[in-house]
Amino acid sequence: MNALVEFQDVNLSYGAQKVLDDVNLSIAPGEIVTIVGPNGSGKSSLLRALIGALKPASGQINRASGLRIGYVPQKLHIDPTLPMTVRRFLSLPLKIIDAEAAQALQRAGVYDLGPRQMSLLSGGQFQRVLLARALLHKPQLLLLDEATQGLDQPGSAAFYRHIEKVRDELNCAVLMISHELHVVMSASDRVICLNGHVCCEGKPDVVASAPEYRALFGTGTGGALALYRHDHDHAHGDGCDHDHTHDPVNEAAD
Amino acid sequence: MLDSFLVRAALAGLGVALAAAPLGCFVVWRRMAYFGDATAHASILGVALALSFNMSVFAGVLVVALIMATTVSTLSGRGYAMDTLLGVLAHSAIAFGLVAVSFLEGVRIDLMAYLFGDILAVGRVDLAVIWGGALLVLALVGWRWQQLLTATVSPDLAHASGIDPKREQLILTIALAVVVAVAIKVVGVLLIAALLIIPAAAARPLSQTPERMAAIAAGIGAASAIGGLQLAYAFDTPAGPTIVCVAAAVFALTSLFSLIRD
Image (cartoon, rainbow over all chains, first blue to last red; front, top):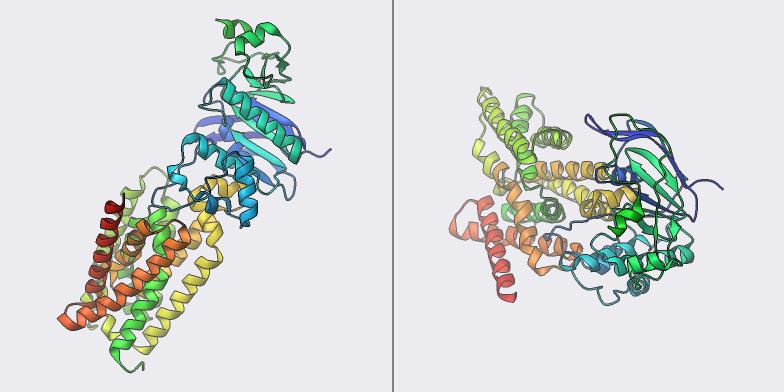
C-alpha cells in the first residue's frame, strides 16, 4: 500500500538549533501512530513540517497527491477582536451546510455550541470544536497535537476511544503527538519515540488484561491506555542526552 | 449630477469607505494597525517622486506604498519586533518624503492637501481612479475571503488546508497599498489609517461573525463620509478630519453600547 506521508532524511533547524535530525518515517492509510518524546524533542515541529508550515533544511517530505489532512493544533488563539461563532468557524475554509455543521457538533458532543463565540469557549469545548472541524471533510490523515493535554486519565481514555471510533468510521490514518512518554493509546499500531532523531519504534503493550496495570491506571480507562516500552538498541553520542528513563513500569509504580 | 463638487466629494468618500471597511477589519484582526500607518506615511514619499518624475500622484503613491508594504512583510520576524520595525520605517519614510518635497523647485505643491486630503477638489478623473481602485480591492478581498479568514485565524490551519498564509498576507498587503493610494486625496496621509481602523473597531461590538463586522464597518464608514461632509459644509471645517471625527463619535457610541450591554 502506498504511504500517505513519507519523511526521507528530514533535517530541520531553527537558526543554529537542530530540531529534526535525519528523520525517516512513513504513515500508511488507516494506521494509528503515536509520537512520544520529551519537551523540545521536535514533535510539534515534525507535525508542522508535515503540513508544510516549516520547510526542512534538507531531505524530502512526500505527501500523497490530494491528501486530505485534518489538523488539530495544540493551541489556537482566536483574537477577541475577531467575531467568530462556532458555526462560522466550521465553514473555514470550505463552506458547509447547516445540517453538516449540526451533525459534526453532535458527533463531537457539543451540539448546542453553534451560535457561541469561539473566544468564549472553555479549553475542553474548544478542543472538541477543533476536532469536529478537522473531521468535516473526511480526512485521510488526522493530526492531533497533544490533544489530551489537560485531561485526566479517564478523560484521556475517553478521548482515545473516541478517536478509535472515528478511525473505524472514516478509516483515516491518525498521527498523534503525546506528551506522555510511557502511557499511550492502546489502539496505536506503532509508537515512535522522537528526540530530534527517531530513537525507537514499536508496538505498545496492552494493559487491559493485566490486573496490576489496571490497578495502576484505575478502572475507569477501559483498556484505552497502554504502556510503551522504550527499546533503544542504538548508542547515543555525547550530544544526545535522553532525559527520560527507559524503565516505564518501575517509574510508573514509584 | 457629477458637476457638483459636493456630489463628487460624497461619491469619493463612499468609494474609499466601502473599500476600507473589509480591509480595515483584517487590519484590526491581524493587529496590523501600524502597518496601515507605515504604508500611508510612506506615500508622501510617493507624492514627491510622482511630482519630480511627472507621473500621476496615484501611480507614485501606489508604487511606494507597495514597496513599503512588501518591505515590512519581508523584514518582520527577523530580529526586530514589528512595532520597532514599523516605527523606524514609517517615520523615516515620512521624513524622507518631506525632505524630498522640499527639493522640488518650481513646483508649487500644497503639502497640506496631501497630509490631510482635499476631498472637495476631487475631479472626475480622481473619482474614476478612486472607484476603480475601490472595486478592485473589493473584488480581491471578496475572491480570497475564505482563505484570508482562515489564514487570519491560524496560519497552521491554513497550511493544513493547503492555503499558503504568506500568499494571503501578500494579497492583503497589495490591497492595503491600493486603498492608501486612492484614499490620499480623500483624507490624506495622516488619517488613512483612521479610516481603516475606526469603522472596523466601531463595528466590533455589534458583530457576531466576520462578515457582519465587515458589512457594519462599511455602513459606518459610508455614514461617516456623508455625515462628515455635511458637517464640514455646515461649519466650514476641513472635510477629511471631520469625516474621521464622525467615525470616532460612532466608535464612542458603540463602545458605550457594549459597556452597557455587558
